[in-house]
Length: 365
Image 1: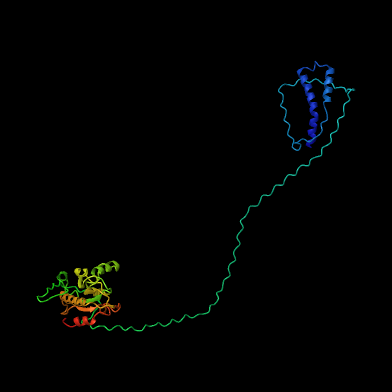
Image 2: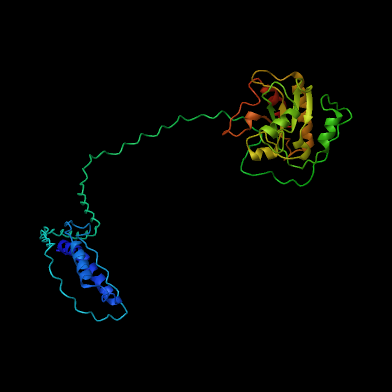
């Protein structure tokens, strides 16, 4: 429907322009000056200019642009004089206008159907898990508990025969019985001679503040080493074994390796009159003096000078500490006084036990 209208516009445009020119001429007052012949000539000229325009679809035939509306002229239009109708000129016959062929109608494009709005995605609901079927426990065969084996009773250990002691050892107290005062120092007699107890040794023994009824036992040990002296034992017991009071013995008798053969050395525990560390019992350590002979008496025997020096020292110490209940202090080797729960072989298998028992086990000695 739009294409024929566009073609008619193209055919009418020259006629309109010619008429517009005549109207302008009439409006300006020039139409009176032209003759009839001049008017006729201009009319014929304008008609000849009309020619057939091939009908071609405009590029925007489907969507023609609207024509702009002409702006109204503010000037008043003059009265138009009636135009004389032009006579047909016999000389120039009019060319018949060809009828325009109707253009085929262009079918309008179908409008695209609006797509339906996508449905909102919904979160799929989780499928319910099937409930587990109850498992029936299988009956297990009854296993009777194993019969405990009867406890193995170790064969009775026969303790070694206890030596006959003058005084029974009762390990029930903790500490020692408080003494009533200090024991006076003992001075050697006019006719008494000491071979190994030199004057400096006697002076140190006498200067110690010995309490009455304090020391009840004198215990003899071996060092378990073939050499040594009081200084070496002091370092070993304090720094290696961690004993804060140092050397565990009160006295040491050398064998000639690190000190003189039969030389008597006095330890710090005698000077301070404190308990020893030579017996595996706190009670016995508080009431027993310790004498160590340097040597390993499981392999060797003590020297003659060591035995003589040990006898002199025990005799003098008995007199220095005094009697308890009219009896001298008891002299025993280490293994005969140590508690049975902690047996020991000190002072060794080659120590002269007959000598020590025959010399100091007799009453009144």
